[in-house]
Length: 197
Image 1 (cartoon, rainbow, N blue to C red):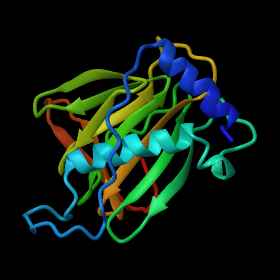
Image 2: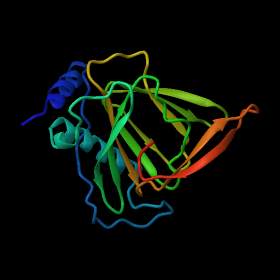
Image 3: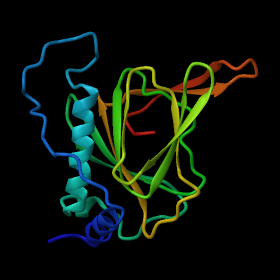
Image 4: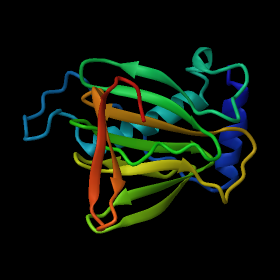
């Protein structure tokens, strides 16, 4: 049975002419050569995994994890999958709640926007650049990627703004930053965490 969220969100995606990306699963036990990365999963793998996570939410496979009512004031998240190599999360976004400039320590990351629209501010090395990620859009985060994510305040959608995120290896820490007066990035703190931004 398809959930109410799935019917509403998939209809909204179809109305926006979002074309789903081909859905393929990455075999967790598939041998891959070790590289200099802290994981055998590549950014492209994480993008496929987040895309599959969106499909699973839309198909109602995670209905038991969804709240009865979406909080319109505070962000919400739930873990969809975890193992030694990977964490997958569903995150809701509310107006005005940003994540702060942060990195994912030693983890690669990726996201797919399920519904609504996000703004991502990321550090280019000289300043902050912004990109808008609408329903169906994806982004990958290599090691050292510093960004801040917020619900796009210029786009109103019926229902929650949601995205699926994948981190490999699973998150263990995040560092937070500020842009200093001299126009450089300064780390303000590092926290141990196993939860998403």
